[in-house]
Image (tube, rainbow, N blue to C red; front, side):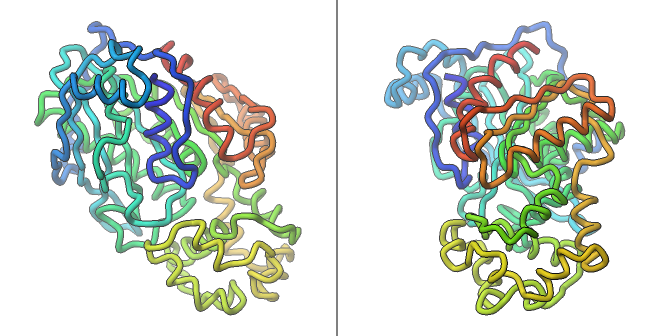
Length: 407
């Protein structure tokens, strides 16, 4: 059942939709010997407010499990669950802003609960932000097994929806996660929620990238007072320079919304504020602001664009991408936001489907090889044979869940 629950959590609001996983009961309540986390003053400073969205008793969750075909595992539901929307401070372009996310906690749990921060994949619409909680969605069952779940919206969604999401921006991605982890400690204190010092980071697609960004921030900045127990990232674009190299060939790319998202985000987040016509041909340059206003899905945006980079990008920009002496600011930004000068210190797994056409398999493979070459000691790379970007997610979970339970 744990696999099913983590699927719900990570797919909440992603382009992948709901993915069914094996109906296997693997969750167990944590042991009482774990040590509660110390109070974090920085976390208190980051906390703004929290709102109880839903409180679900244990028996209702057991009924929910049965109605979804998991009645056999009703005994795994150990606790009722409280679902909160958390508002917290983070930093965007050097200034403090409010951000948001969803927190699911087990009720009346005596033993300290491990924390899992689950980073979702790419979303385009504001309504898909995790904190726009519409009712029971499945991850409540995960918390009922004894885990505290944190699901950040990311900057650009939820409480910060007036900002264009800083897509594949390492620092903003990291802080949105790390600041939520720290701010949530105040929520735990207010509601007498016992939390252990076990912290897991998990994400897929953009969430895989965000997971490594958060891990890097925690491991390289002791001032956060956090320690990653284990981390798992799937199919993230960790090497953005390599991604650009693939686009420069002019080969068709089936999800042009991603390309437009990155360029618009970098243009805004870095304060370049260049006319979009410098990057894109018409009619796309004029269309793009309306396509990325938070009302349209990725599929809807794709239908308004072209999969041919030669037609999507302006001729001068596309030529500059292939010239080593041009568009240096953009290329340097892509390099700075890739994972070149850091290696994971905590136990880490990278997963990737071998037939992925959205984020090429080699992106993870070469990132793994670079990490190993640079001294990573607790790193595994797990290819998922014959699976693409969407279909690799379930096999990742089937492998991941037993691994996390070892810690």
